Each structure stands twice: as C-alpha cells, then as structure tokens.
Image 1 (tube, rainbow, N blue to C red):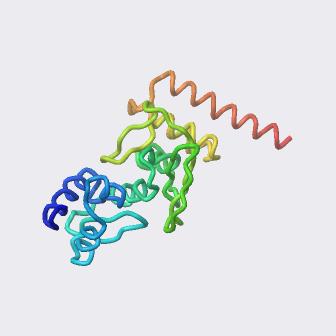
Image 2 (image 1 turned 30 degrees about the vertical axis):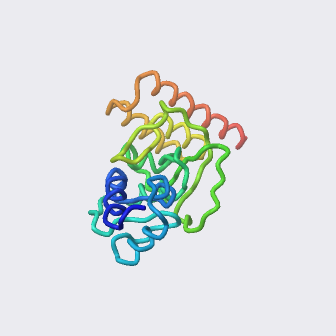
Length: 195
C-alpha cells in the first residue's frame, strides 16, 4: 500500500494532464486506496469537484477547467465536448450555449447526480472525429457541425461556423461543400413543412 505522500505524487502526475482533476476510478486504477483518497481530501490536498471527480486544490485554474470537469463527470472514457460547445470553443460563430454539450457512446447510460449544467448526447464517435482543445477531448469542427444540424442549431450560426472554419483551415473544401449542402437540405425541408 502506498504512503499518503506517494499516493499524492502518483495522483498529481495523473491529474497534471487533466487540469488537476482525477476521477475515483482513475485513483483505483493507480492502486491508490479509497482511504488514501479520503485522507487527501480531508487534509485539503484534494477537493470534491463533482460526482466521482476530485481536483488538486493547488493546481492553477484556467479556462479549460469546467470543460475537463464535465468530460470526467460522465465517467465515460470516450466522452468528448461536442455540438454547440465545440462551435463555441473553436470560436467560429457567435454561438453562446447555455450548457456544456458532451457526447458519450450510443449505449452509455449515465446515472449520476450533478449534471444539470450539461447536455449529454449519445453517439458512437470514430477516432478521426475527435481532437483536442487545451488537453480536453472535443469533436472535430466538421463533426460538431454535423451534430448541430441534427440538434437544430440555427442555420445562420452554422453558416458562420462553416465559412470561418474553412477560412481558418479547420474545414477542407470538400467538408465545407458537404456541410453547406447539409444545412441547405435542412432549410429546404423546414420550408416544405411550413407549406
């Protein structure tokens, strides 16, 4: 069994790649006992951040903190930021989502408290649909726009994202053309329904 100092050092190393956060399941995977975890929390080394997620108190905060906490809160290793949150973080449109959007596997069921600020979507993502934003997993811009088309994000915001994403090199010309056709088809279908 590891001493508290050794446990702290092992957890710090693991948490350093996650903005100072560590999950209870990651703690167990490192061979650190629940008792050692609880002692670190009682001593003020760790704080309980959300269900199953702890944070080193001395780790500096930054803009990515709430997003890393959200991904870890799911308890799903495949979780990634997605939908309107991805558009916002990529800074390609004027979108201002009221919640943090996350995507987990299609069969994943999340049964934990504390997620009122999150919108959890279920979709099996392929490796090429996931990238990183400040060490936090996030869907690619093309994947996010596809998701937002289905989600119902306003077309003018999607058009901004497509135009800016292509200009910034985040979307290839073929991706841009495919996404424009997709948003146009959605607009045409909506117009048909109104007739």
